[in-house]
Image (tube, rainbow, N blue to C red; front, top):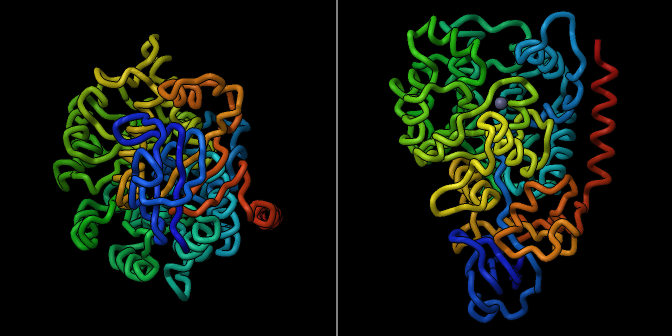
Length: 459
Ligand code: ZN
């Protein structure tokens, strides 16, 4: 692939908005220059565009759940909760085949790209066949997701999940969890197999599923054995019931226990981290780890609200994920994140700092930085050495009419539901043009066929 360049009337750079910015990248999709003119950027013929912002990182995804989004919104017999939703999810996870997973993941990635995500971290635990047997190639299901990412052009960090137990204290797995079964050796085997696919678009880390599903000794073993610098993600403190079970088992709250036993640093992403006390919140902020917030899923599942304001005040890092894929847009995640805080505190404009008074700018830039860190990939900024992952917004849309640059993200996040993402480039390759992906019709047809098969096989 050849390199390329654009000349943006306004571009969001790491230190804020800049006017008339040329951005050039090489044939590997890496930004080589960001300058005031095309000549400064070393680009002879740069295409002129209007508003350019870095593409967002989606730091938490379970791709297969795209196919069940919106299907758990009917009340059951008793009180519905995360735990009753999980039963539906397990039934669904029990049926999906490798080819169906690839079809569902491709649809998800097109959805994500169209709405402005340019990379995703896949928290992947569907390791085995429906009967619990290992596939001939143990990384088969992960490779299917990687293939869908390659086909659609989205960047991917694959996180094979360590899932050994059905609850605290090394409880045995339930029958519905046998597809997820893995031990440290199996996860490291998958990491090794997937490492052969590593390139500018693809990175590999690992993820102990949770303190419920992996023992503290296993988590330590995995973290120590992973190649240096690779991201480690874990679900933590999503539900009050989980906090209570952790207290009963260890005498400590989940994050406090993990912090004491493993330490936490910039390699770690703590997904959800919903139920933290003040000391845990401060410790997480001080650790340099990223809180992986998934506001639309956390709302859908009735998890609770992350305490954003004190966390930001303490210098905490966060990124966003669409997790169960009830939403496919960073706009929805960031809007929910801010609105949840406003509803709780009964005031406005929560995500600000002494140096950044624009809520949209703070949210987008902070989620980029945290998401990039959690992905372990050089993304998240229009800067030399980073991937050329960026969005061209539709500056002719009424929602952006007359907007000065520092109002653009406020309008993007807090005005209506039209998709203002016009073009998307990932690694310098244009994957969305005028709101469309070149493969979207074929990918949607495969997705519909996969969904029909999954429904046929429903009990
Ligand atoms: Zn999750």
